[in-house]
Image (cartoon, rainbow, N blue to C red; front, side):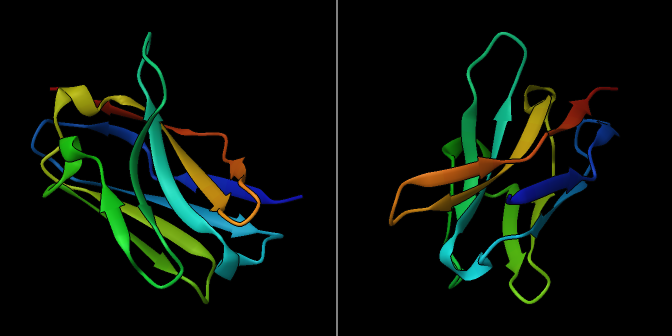
Length: 117
Protein backbone atom coordinates (compact mmCIF):
# COMPACT_ATOMS: atom_id res chain seq x y z
CA UNK A 1 0.00 0.00 0.00
CA UNK A 2 1.27 3.44 -0.94
CA UNK A 3 2.27 5.57 2.03
CA UNK A 4 2.60 9.33 2.11
CA UNK A 5 3.86 10.91 5.33
CA UNK A 6 3.85 14.67 5.75
CA UNK A 7 5.99 16.64 8.18
CA UNK A 8 7.06 20.19 8.86
CA UNK A 9 3.81 21.78 9.90
CA UNK A 10 3.49 24.03 12.90
CA UNK A 11 2.86 27.55 14.11
CA UNK A 12 4.37 30.40 12.13
CA UNK A 13 3.92 34.15 12.28
CA UNK A 14 2.48 36.11 9.36
CA UNK A 15 5.21 36.90 6.88
CA UNK A 16 7.26 33.94 8.02
CA UNK A 17 8.31 30.77 6.24
CA UNK A 18 7.73 27.08 6.63
CA UNK A 19 8.81 24.03 4.67
CA UNK A 20 6.59 20.99 4.40
CA UNK A 21 7.93 17.60 3.42
CA UNK A 22 6.22 14.48 2.15
CA UNK A 23 7.95 11.11 2.17
CA UNK A 24 6.52 8.58 -0.26
CA UNK A 25 7.02 4.85 0.04
CA UNK A 26 5.77 1.69 -1.65
CA UNK A 27 5.21 3.72 -4.79
CA UNK A 28 6.52 3.82 -8.33
CA UNK A 29 7.34 7.46 -7.87
CA UNK A 30 8.03 8.35 -11.49
CA UNK A 31 4.48 7.68 -12.66
CA UNK A 32 2.83 10.00 -10.15
CA UNK A 33 2.15 13.68 -10.25
CA UNK A 34 2.70 14.86 -6.70
CA UNK A 35 0.71 17.62 -5.11
CA UNK A 36 -0.18 19.56 -2.01
CA UNK A 37 -3.74 20.31 -1.01
CA UNK A 38 -5.12 22.08 2.01
CA UNK A 39 -8.34 22.19 3.98
CA UNK A 40 -9.29 24.93 6.37
CA UNK A 41 -12.01 24.47 9.01
CA UNK A 42 -15.43 24.63 7.44
CA UNK A 43 -14.05 24.76 3.92
CA UNK A 44 -13.54 22.25 1.14
CA UNK A 45 -10.17 20.78 0.33
CA UNK A 46 -8.39 22.80 -2.34
CA UNK A 47 -5.35 22.26 -4.51
CA UNK A 48 -2.29 24.31 -3.62
CA UNK A 49 0.26 23.08 -6.14
CA UNK A 50 1.37 20.02 -8.05
CA UNK A 51 4.46 18.88 -9.89
CA UNK A 52 5.08 16.24 -12.51
CA UNK A 53 7.94 13.76 -12.48
CA UNK A 54 9.69 15.97 -15.01
CA UNK A 55 9.41 18.99 -12.75
CA UNK A 56 6.57 20.95 -14.32
CA UNK A 57 4.82 22.78 -11.51
CA UNK A 58 1.44 24.45 -11.30
CA UNK A 59 0.14 26.67 -8.54
CA UNK A 60 -3.15 27.96 -7.29
CA UNK A 61 -3.45 31.70 -7.80
CA UNK A 62 -3.60 32.33 -4.06
CA UNK A 63 -0.04 30.99 -3.54
CA UNK A 64 1.70 32.09 -6.72
CA UNK A 65 4.90 33.93 -5.92
CA UNK A 66 4.87 32.77 -2.29
CA UNK A 67 4.98 28.97 -2.33
CA UNK A 68 7.30 26.66 -4.24
CA UNK A 69 6.76 22.96 -4.80
CA UNK A 70 9.68 20.67 -5.56
CA UNK A 71 10.46 16.98 -5.62
CA UNK A 72 13.48 14.76 -5.20
CA UNK A 73 12.78 11.74 -7.34
CA UNK A 74 15.74 9.76 -6.03
CA UNK A 75 14.57 10.16 -2.44
CA UNK A 76 10.84 9.97 -3.24
CA UNK A 77 10.27 13.26 -1.47
CA UNK A 78 8.06 16.23 -2.21
CA UNK A 79 8.42 19.63 -0.60
CA UNK A 80 6.38 22.77 -0.24
CA UNK A 81 8.34 25.89 0.61
CA UNK A 82 5.95 28.43 2.06
CA UNK A 83 7.14 32.02 2.21
CA UNK A 84 5.37 35.20 3.26
CA UNK A 85 2.59 33.15 4.83
CA UNK A 86 -0.73 34.74 5.69
CA UNK A 87 -3.36 33.91 8.32
CA UNK A 88 -5.59 32.60 5.53
CA UNK A 89 -2.96 29.94 4.80
CA UNK A 90 -3.95 28.26 8.05
CA UNK A 91 -5.14 24.76 7.20
CA UNK A 92 -4.31 21.09 7.28
CA UNK A 93 -1.97 20.42 4.37
CA UNK A 94 -2.16 17.09 2.60
CA UNK A 95 0.29 15.38 0.29
CA UNK A 96 -1.25 13.75 -2.77
CA UNK A 97 0.05 11.28 -5.34
CA UNK A 98 -1.93 11.11 -8.58
CA UNK A 99 -1.50 8.61 -11.38
CA UNK A 100 -3.12 10.30 -14.35
CA UNK A 101 -3.30 7.21 -16.57
CA UNK A 102 -5.84 5.48 -14.38
CA UNK A 103 -7.00 8.45 -12.32
CA UNK A 104 -5.86 6.90 -9.06
CA UNK A 105 -4.66 8.92 -6.15
CA UNK A 106 -3.38 8.53 -2.61
CA UNK A 107 -3.36 10.86 0.37
CA UNK A 108 -1.23 11.46 3.39
CA UNK A 109 -2.63 12.01 6.85
CA UNK A 110 -2.06 15.76 6.76
CA UNK A 111 -0.02 18.25 8.73
CA UNK A 112 -1.40 21.30 10.48
CA UNK A 113 -0.13 24.74 9.52
CA UNK A 114 -1.23 27.65 11.68
CA UNK A 115 -0.34 31.21 10.77
CA UNK A 116 -0.84 33.52 13.71
CA UNK A 117 0.91 36.20 15.66
